[in-house]
Image 1 (cartoon, one colour):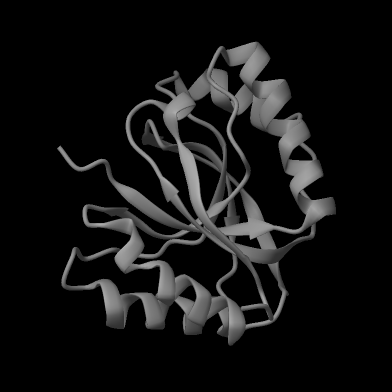
Image 2 (cartoon, rainbow, N blue to C red):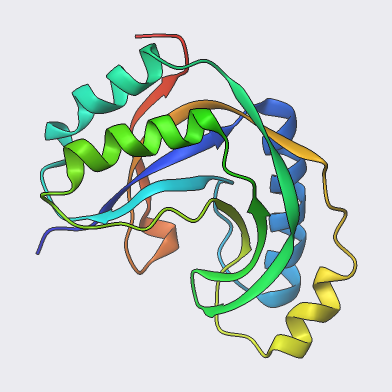
Length: 169
């Protein structure tokens, strides 16, 4: 069985550190595995990941670091989207998603809803709201890289296969 892969936007150092602190704190309290902060640009692809590597390099070399506003903190019903920062989509994100969609649609459709998950799991909404009220919401997040990551049901098994900084080949 082919493990799914996802294309992630990676926060730059300061934004990553800020989000990682929130994720680590919530992971201790809610008992979920720690993971790297990211915004999924295109997810759950089932294909040979190395076919996609040139696309990752192309996107990285043709885009610069960028910032996007954090709209608010939200809760959801999905294990993978239960507590998250909702992000405002900007022109750079639209451009990168459009490139992914043009090249990856034959593998699967994907609806891009920019967000950065702060917790994974199945929790009561009251419990999540309790934690959400205590999370400082940054005005914006900065992104500096793109990665191709082996994802799947087990967070501890996730693996970065390709990582490129924006503006680099």
